[in-house]
Length: 107
Image (cartoon, rainbow, N blue to C red):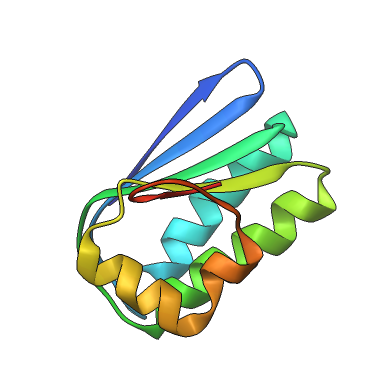
């Protein structure tokens, strides 16, 4: 599975790896959503440090998790996104939804 979930008190972190495309986006969403809906975290972190490729399915993944965590009363953070992934997110307007905290991270 290209995602590992870590739960630490009120923070759920999803460590995503490999490619995010239409072939695996559903399973990524399912696993992340199950953890978030079980914990109701204050913060959901999507760690893109090991992502090598992302198409529009990745944008959908982020947007859907943003809506989910907002509905659960939490916040979304994106961490360790490679430069190429940050560029795709910026072009999609994601950083307008998520306040930028530091280089490579959106919170």
